[in-house]
Amino acid sequence: MRKLGSVFIVLLLASLLVACGEEETGDAAIDEKNIVVGVTSGPQEEIAEVAAEVAAEEFGLEVELKVFSDYVLPNTALSEGDLDLNSYQHGPFLDQFNEDHGTDLVPVGKTILNPMGIYSETYESIEDLPDGAKFGLPNDPTNGGRALFILEEAGVITLEEGKAETASIHDVVDNPKNLEFIELDAAQIPKQLSEVDVAAINTNFALEAGISPKEDSILLESTNSPYVNYIVVRAENEDDPTVEKFVQAYQSDKVKTFIEEEFQGSIIPSWDE
Image 1 (cartoon, rainbow, N blue to C red):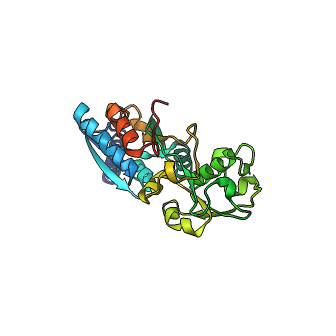
Image 2: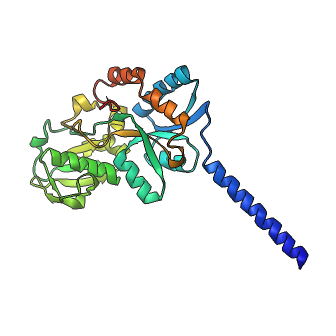
Image 3: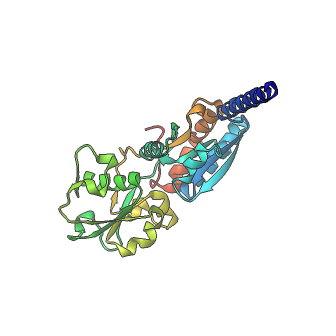
């Protein structure tokens, strides 16, 4: 019995040591010379590439970019430790992700505003929409709510009081044009624009499809939008000096100039706002 007891104690101590080691690993500082950053394909990737150049030039920080094609995986990868930070999302989306997944991801620096646009292949103005027009909008909660908020700001619909940024199609209380709301995958809306009368498209997907938010939209999100994008990390790395270096690299004059020259107002630097 003593021998079995001794074995049990040894196993218990070993388990505690492993647990402590795992906890320490989870709270470990990010590598001072190398960092892994998640971005979505398109403009976010292009801008991050310039930020990576600045990080290397100014801080000797090597940045590896991992590119994703959807809005969920970059946060999943970050929360699981496969990324050191990511750069692709606005605040309401981050809040909703944390709530839905029980994660603790935090914003550490503003990046850009991708003003969502409303587009139509048939109509030149939002006022021209006929009664019962089909309106395509993203099927994820935050971007769908964002599209509805744009319509409300333009006086096209009225949302239930207090909903605003978190609204769904079920929160529309006044719809004078009797718009028919059709929820679609955000990435596919540019390809499905001809199948609806009008649609809300995220800027990155619009640009990938050769659509200019500034030139082609019939209604563009206002510049006082709450949907500014952020650099995001796990809470334990919020004050990490390596993260701060990347934030500074991103918020540099070189990156700002690139955004203004490359996107001509379709994407707006937001850290000085």
